[in-house]
Image (cartoon, rainbow, N blue to C red; front, top):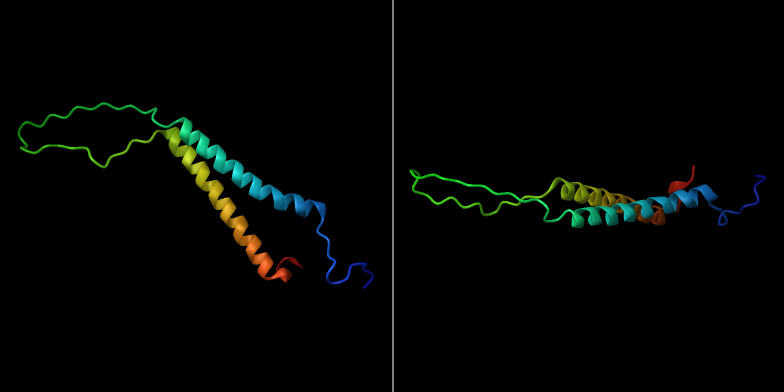
Length: 105
């Protein structure tokens, strides 16, 4: 009683609209930044090794090993965190659209 809004005319405050836009933008920035960091640090690790086993009668092969630099690992971690933020945001938006009364007190 005493409110000018009817049941269909609820306006979102400006702060709520701003916070709703910050989350997906932060997620996209994290994904792009993480991909850039991972790409810029690619192939910077070099490793040389030597193995000598004269009595084992077997050939040692290092197949299936991959060496990833710490910068690439951090970039991929940031990109993964950004993807998780975007997945959370998408699920939240779909859930709110399915049940519009969910966000009301």
